[in-house]
Length: 281
Ligand code: 13P
Image (cartoon, rainbow, N blue to C red; front, side, top):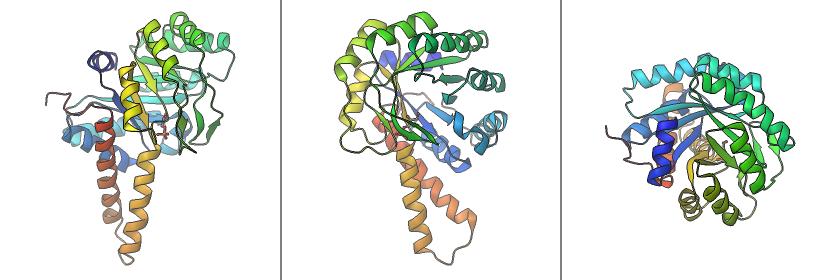
Protein backbone atom coordinates (compact mmCIF):
# COMPACT_ATOMS: atom_id res chain seq x y z
CA UNK A 1 0.00 0.00 0.00
CA UNK A 2 2.67 2.49 1.06
CA UNK A 3 4.58 2.36 -2.24
CA UNK A 4 1.46 2.69 -4.39
CA UNK A 5 -0.21 5.43 -2.39
CA UNK A 6 3.00 7.48 -2.22
CA UNK A 7 3.33 7.19 -5.97
CA UNK A 8 -0.25 8.44 -6.39
CA UNK A 9 0.45 11.26 -3.90
CA UNK A 10 3.54 12.38 -5.83
CA UNK A 11 1.98 12.04 -9.28
CA UNK A 12 -1.33 13.76 -8.52
CA UNK A 13 -3.87 11.00 -8.79
CA UNK A 14 -5.78 8.92 -6.24
CA UNK A 15 -6.12 5.18 -5.83
CA UNK A 16 -9.83 4.36 -5.75
CA UNK A 17 -11.07 2.45 -2.74
CA UNK A 18 -14.20 0.52 -3.62
CA UNK A 19 -16.17 -1.29 -0.94
CA UNK A 20 -17.51 -4.75 -1.65
CA UNK A 21 -20.75 -6.49 -0.76
CA UNK A 22 -20.17 -9.93 -2.29
CA UNK A 23 -18.37 -11.93 -4.92
CA UNK A 24 -19.76 -10.07 -7.94
CA UNK A 25 -18.27 -6.83 -6.58
CA UNK A 26 -14.83 -8.45 -6.43
CA UNK A 27 -15.12 -9.73 -10.01
CA UNK A 28 -16.45 -6.48 -11.47
CA UNK A 29 -13.88 -4.30 -9.71
CA UNK A 30 -10.92 -6.54 -10.65
CA UNK A 31 -12.06 -6.66 -14.27
CA UNK A 32 -12.23 -2.84 -14.45
CA UNK A 33 -8.85 -2.41 -12.73
CA UNK A 34 -7.10 -4.78 -15.13
CA UNK A 35 -8.79 -3.44 -18.28
CA UNK A 36 -7.93 0.12 -17.28
CA UNK A 37 -4.44 -0.51 -15.89
CA UNK A 38 -5.44 1.07 -12.59
CA UNK A 39 -4.31 0.17 -9.08
CA UNK A 40 -7.28 -0.51 -6.82
CA UNK A 41 -8.11 -0.86 -3.14
CA UNK A 42 -10.81 -3.40 -2.31
CA UNK A 43 -12.33 -2.64 1.07
CA UNK A 44 -14.68 -4.20 3.59
CA UNK A 45 -16.16 -2.17 6.41
CA UNK A 46 -15.75 -3.58 9.93
CA UNK A 47 -19.56 -3.83 10.19
CA UNK A 48 -19.76 -5.90 6.99
CA UNK A 49 -17.09 -8.50 7.89
CA UNK A 50 -19.47 -11.13 9.38
CA UNK A 51 -21.89 -10.79 6.43
CA UNK A 52 -19.02 -11.36 4.00
CA UNK A 53 -17.74 -14.48 5.81
CA UNK A 54 -14.93 -13.18 8.05
CA UNK A 55 -11.47 -11.71 7.46
CA UNK A 56 -9.70 -14.91 6.30
CA UNK A 57 -12.48 -15.90 3.91
CA UNK A 58 -12.64 -12.43 2.35
CA UNK A 59 -8.88 -12.19 1.91
CA UNK A 60 -8.53 -15.68 0.42
CA UNK A 61 -11.44 -15.06 -1.96
CA UNK A 62 -9.92 -11.82 -3.24
CA UNK A 63 -6.43 -13.37 -3.60
CA UNK A 64 -7.86 -16.41 -5.41
CA UNK A 65 -9.83 -14.20 -7.79
CA UNK A 66 -6.70 -12.14 -8.50
CA UNK A 67 -4.96 -15.39 -9.47
CA UNK A 68 -7.73 -17.03 -11.50
CA UNK A 69 -8.55 -13.79 -13.35
CA UNK A 70 -4.83 -13.18 -14.12
CA UNK A 71 -4.90 -9.73 -12.54
CA UNK A 72 -1.51 -8.05 -12.69
CA UNK A 73 -2.34 -4.53 -11.43
CA UNK A 74 -1.77 -3.78 -7.72
CA UNK A 75 -4.77 -4.92 -5.65
CA UNK A 76 -4.72 -3.81 -2.02
CA UNK A 77 -7.06 -5.31 0.57
CA UNK A 78 -8.16 -2.80 3.19
CA UNK A 79 -10.28 -2.75 6.36
CA UNK A 80 -12.57 0.30 6.21
CA UNK A 81 -13.77 1.95 9.46
CA UNK A 82 -12.19 -0.51 11.89
CA UNK A 83 -14.17 0.17 15.06
CA UNK A 84 -11.93 -1.57 17.60
CA UNK A 85 -8.23 -2.17 18.14
CA UNK A 86 -8.99 -5.92 18.29
CA UNK A 87 -10.82 -5.84 14.93
CA UNK A 88 -7.86 -4.08 13.28
CA UNK A 89 -5.44 -6.61 14.79
CA UNK A 90 -7.58 -9.46 13.45
CA UNK A 91 -7.45 -7.95 9.95
CA UNK A 92 -3.66 -7.62 10.25
CA UNK A 93 -3.37 -11.24 11.43
CA UNK A 94 -5.54 -12.43 8.53
CA UNK A 95 -3.16 -10.72 6.07
CA UNK A 96 -4.94 -7.49 5.12
CA UNK A 97 -2.56 -4.98 3.51
CA UNK A 98 -4.04 -1.94 5.19
CA UNK A 99 -6.42 -0.97 8.00
CA UNK A 100 -8.35 2.15 8.90
CA UNK A 101 -8.94 2.76 12.59
CA UNK A 102 -11.98 4.92 13.18
CA UNK A 103 -12.61 6.10 16.72
CA UNK A 104 -12.70 9.73 15.70
CA UNK A 105 -15.88 10.25 17.71
CA UNK A 106 -13.79 9.90 20.90
CA UNK A 107 -11.95 12.84 22.46
CA UNK A 108 -8.74 13.46 20.50
CA UNK A 109 -6.39 12.17 23.25
CA UNK A 110 -8.20 8.84 23.31
CA UNK A 111 -8.36 8.67 19.52
CA UNK A 112 -4.58 9.22 19.39
CA UNK A 113 -3.87 6.62 22.09
CA UNK A 114 -5.95 3.87 20.44
CA UNK A 115 -4.82 4.74 16.90
CA UNK A 116 -1.19 4.48 18.09
CA UNK A 117 -1.94 1.03 19.50
CA UNK A 118 -3.16 -0.05 16.05
CA UNK A 119 -0.15 1.58 14.35
CA UNK A 120 2.35 -0.15 16.65
CA UNK A 121 0.82 -3.55 15.92
CA UNK A 122 0.21 -3.02 12.20
CA UNK A 123 3.64 -1.57 11.42
CA UNK A 124 5.32 -4.57 13.07
CA UNK A 125 3.54 -6.62 10.40
CA UNK A 126 4.25 -4.17 7.60
CA UNK A 127 0.58 -3.16 7.37
CA UNK A 128 -0.48 0.38 6.42
CA UNK A 129 -2.68 2.45 8.78
CA UNK A 130 -5.20 5.23 8.08
CA UNK A 131 -6.60 7.36 10.91
CA UNK A 132 -9.55 9.73 11.03
CA UNK A 133 -10.30 13.11 12.58
CA UNK A 134 -13.77 14.67 12.73
CA UNK A 135 -16.74 12.66 11.46
CA UNK A 136 -17.93 11.81 7.98
CA UNK A 137 -21.70 12.27 8.08
CA UNK A 138 -24.44 9.94 6.86
CA UNK A 139 -24.61 6.17 7.19
CA UNK A 140 -22.74 3.17 5.88
CA UNK A 141 -23.37 -0.52 6.59
CA UNK A 142 -25.37 0.38 9.68
CA UNK A 143 -22.80 2.89 10.98
CA UNK A 144 -24.48 6.26 11.42
CA UNK A 145 -22.79 9.54 12.33
CA UNK A 146 -23.37 13.26 12.24
CA UNK A 147 -21.02 15.31 10.11
CA UNK A 148 -18.29 17.02 12.15
CA UNK A 149 -15.57 19.01 10.38
CA UNK A 150 -12.05 18.07 11.51
CA UNK A 151 -9.95 20.65 13.32
CA UNK A 152 -6.52 21.33 11.81
CA UNK A 153 -4.83 21.07 15.23
CA UNK A 154 -6.36 17.65 15.87
CA UNK A 155 -5.25 16.44 12.42
CA UNK A 156 -1.68 17.53 13.13
CA UNK A 157 -1.72 15.90 16.55
CA UNK A 158 -3.13 12.58 15.32
CA UNK A 159 -0.63 12.38 12.44
CA UNK A 160 2.43 13.37 14.47
CA UNK A 161 1.63 11.51 17.69
CA UNK A 162 0.25 8.23 16.36
CA UNK A 163 2.52 7.86 13.27
CA UNK A 164 -0.35 6.91 10.94
CA UNK A 165 0.54 6.53 7.26
CA UNK A 166 -2.41 8.48 5.93
CA UNK A 167 -5.12 10.69 7.34
CA UNK A 168 -8.83 10.96 6.61
CA UNK A 169 -9.85 14.44 7.77
CA UNK A 170 -13.64 14.80 7.69
CA UNK A 171 -14.13 18.05 5.79
CA UNK A 172 -17.78 17.97 4.77
CA UNK A 173 -18.18 14.64 3.00
CA UNK A 174 -21.00 12.24 3.79
CA UNK A 175 -21.49 8.48 3.43
CA UNK A 176 -24.50 7.56 1.32
CA UNK A 177 -26.56 9.97 -0.75
CA UNK A 178 -26.12 13.73 -0.22
CA UNK A 179 -29.05 15.87 0.79
CA UNK A 180 -28.21 19.10 -1.04
CA UNK A 181 -24.78 19.94 -2.41
CA UNK A 182 -21.60 18.60 -0.76
CA UNK A 183 -19.76 21.43 0.99
CA UNK A 184 -16.09 20.53 1.31
CA UNK A 185 -13.82 22.88 3.28
CA UNK A 186 -11.02 23.32 0.74
CA UNK A 187 -9.34 26.03 2.83
CA UNK A 188 -8.79 23.62 5.73
CA UNK A 189 -7.87 20.88 3.28
CA UNK A 190 -5.07 22.97 1.84
CA UNK A 191 -3.85 23.94 5.31
CA UNK A 192 -3.74 20.28 6.46
CA UNK A 193 -1.98 19.21 3.28
CA UNK A 194 0.60 21.99 3.55
CA UNK A 195 1.40 21.25 7.18
CA UNK A 196 1.42 17.43 7.10
CA UNK A 197 2.45 16.51 3.57
CA UNK A 198 1.17 12.93 3.98
CA UNK A 199 -1.43 11.20 1.77
CA UNK A 200 -4.98 12.23 2.65
CA UNK A 201 -8.08 10.07 2.23
CA UNK A 202 -11.51 11.27 1.12
CA UNK A 203 -14.49 9.30 2.40
CA UNK A 204 -18.03 9.62 1.07
CA UNK A 205 -17.01 10.33 -2.53
CA UNK A 206 -20.26 9.15 -4.17
CA UNK A 207 -22.14 12.29 -5.19
CA UNK A 208 -19.14 14.65 -5.09
CA UNK A 209 -18.57 16.43 -8.43
CA UNK A 210 -15.61 15.54 -10.64
CA UNK A 211 -14.41 19.13 -10.21
CA UNK A 212 -14.33 18.82 -6.40
CA UNK A 213 -12.70 15.39 -6.56
CA UNK A 214 -10.02 16.88 -8.77
CA UNK A 215 -9.47 19.72 -6.31
CA UNK A 216 -9.22 17.19 -3.46
CA UNK A 217 -6.56 15.25 -5.40
CA UNK A 218 -4.62 18.50 -5.98
CA UNK A 219 -4.83 19.07 -2.21
CA UNK A 220 -3.17 15.80 -1.21
CA UNK A 221 -5.92 13.18 -1.46
CA UNK A 222 -4.25 10.03 -2.78
CA UNK A 223 -7.04 7.61 -1.84
CA UNK A 224 -10.73 8.24 -2.53
CA UNK A 225 -13.46 5.97 -1.16
CA UNK A 226 -16.59 4.90 -3.04
CA UNK A 227 -19.41 2.59 -2.01
CA UNK A 228 -22.88 4.10 -2.61
CA UNK A 229 -22.31 4.96 -6.29
CA UNK A 230 -21.66 1.35 -7.23
CA UNK A 231 -24.51 0.05 -5.06
CA UNK A 232 -27.02 2.39 -6.69
CA UNK A 233 -25.87 1.34 -10.18
CA UNK A 234 -26.04 -2.37 -9.24
CA UNK A 235 -29.49 -1.90 -7.73
CA UNK A 236 -30.86 -0.11 -10.80
CA UNK A 237 -29.44 -2.77 -13.09
CA UNK A 238 -30.89 -5.62 -11.04
CA UNK A 239 -34.40 -4.12 -11.02
CA UNK A 240 -34.21 -3.42 -14.72
CA UNK A 241 -32.91 -6.90 -15.58
CA UNK A 242 -35.64 -8.63 -13.56
CA UNK A 243 -38.35 -6.40 -15.04
CA UNK A 244 -37.13 -6.98 -18.59
CA UNK A 245 -36.59 -10.73 -18.13
CA UNK A 246 -39.44 -11.93 -15.88
CA UNK A 247 -38.96 -15.57 -16.92
CA UNK A 248 -35.20 -15.74 -16.54
CA UNK A 249 -34.49 -17.72 -13.37
CA UNK A 250 -30.81 -18.30 -14.12
CA UNK A 251 -28.76 -16.89 -11.25
CA UNK A 252 -25.73 -16.81 -13.55
CA UNK A 253 -27.47 -14.57 -16.10
CA UNK A 254 -28.80 -12.24 -13.40
CA UNK A 255 -25.47 -12.02 -11.56
CA UNK A 256 -23.47 -11.59 -14.77
CA UNK A 257 -25.51 -8.52 -15.62
CA UNK A 258 -24.59 -7.14 -12.17
CA UNK A 259 -20.88 -7.82 -12.71
CA UNK A 260 -21.00 -5.84 -15.95
CA UNK A 261 -22.64 -2.84 -14.26
CA UNK A 262 -20.26 -2.97 -11.30
CA UNK A 263 -17.33 -3.09 -13.71
CA UNK A 264 -18.57 -0.14 -15.81
CA UNK A 265 -19.20 1.93 -12.67
CA UNK A 266 -15.77 1.01 -11.27
CA UNK A 267 -14.23 2.19 -14.54
CA UNK A 268 -15.98 5.54 -14.20
CA UNK A 269 -14.70 5.79 -10.59
CA UNK A 270 -11.15 5.10 -11.79
CA UNK A 271 -11.53 7.88 -14.32
CA UNK A 272 -12.70 10.30 -11.59
CA UNK A 273 -9.59 9.35 -9.57
CA UNK A 274 -7.32 9.83 -12.64
CA UNK A 275 -5.86 6.39 -11.89
CA UNK A 276 -6.38 4.91 -15.37
CA UNK A 277 -3.21 3.77 -17.19
CA UNK A 278 -1.04 4.38 -14.17
CA UNK A 279 0.25 0.78 -14.15
CA UNK A 280 2.50 -0.77 -16.81
CA UNK A 281 0.94 -4.10 -17.73
P1 13P B 1 -19.90 6.55 -0.21
O1 13P B 1 -20.74 5.37 0.13
O2 13P B 1 -20.56 7.81 0.07
O3 13P B 1 -19.33 6.45 -1.57
O4 13P B 1 -18.65 6.50 0.80
C1 13P B 1 -17.77 5.41 0.78
C2 13P B 1 -16.78 5.50 1.86
O5 13P B 1 -16.38 6.55 2.29
C3 13P B 1 -16.24 4.26 2.41
O6 13P B 1 -15.51 4.49 3.56
